Image (cartoon, rainbow, N blue to C red; front, side, top):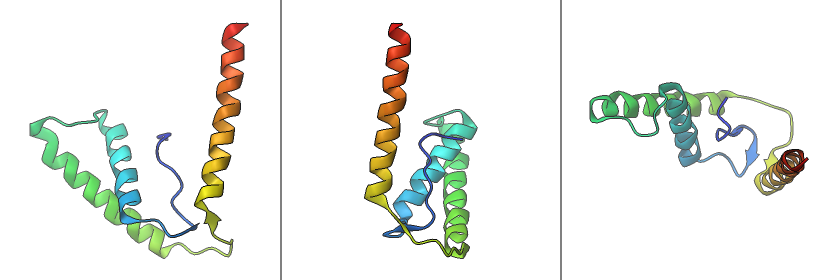
Length: 96
């Protein structure tokens, strides 16, 4: 799983098309092994991003949940806290 692809379902405010496109782009980059395709592969790369974004939007629109929507700011703060703990642990492990 790409570390840069984040959960997009059940957030308030709702996921934007830009966020869906960014996730699709990260997925295609990971699968293809390329961050910027060659000219020969650009059309296939861009088509894959568009198709995955389209399907992802349908998925998000069709998913149902009874859980209350998550707050983006609170979830981002939790992620920063987890990262700080993880990198602090790694830094102390490297020093030892």
